Length: 138
Image (cartoon, rainbow, N blue to C red):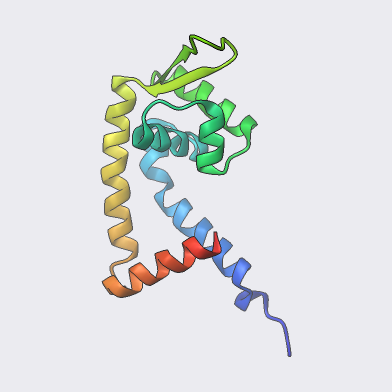
């Protein structure tokens, strides 16, 4: 049996991921000057509300260094604020500012539109199946 990297599932998943990420990138980069990790952090805060950096690392499957850099950048852009924990000063709670909430709402709409675009050739059943399979593999 011959091996073809073009048929190797991890390679196909990676190629697809990179292609759709790159295609969606202008939505957050050109509008808000964000990097990929920054918009992922913004989205988790938009979805879940107040979180710690450690919680974002877990939810987004991101390394703490990347989250730390993203938090610093989002704070500099005035998209998030930090609040020290009352019981443990080493802990900070992160939340979106009003400006961050507006950016999240705008990018949330853009993400929904983008998902509709990339799934337009698929039936509802195929979309559900694709999402289910990807969740099982992840």
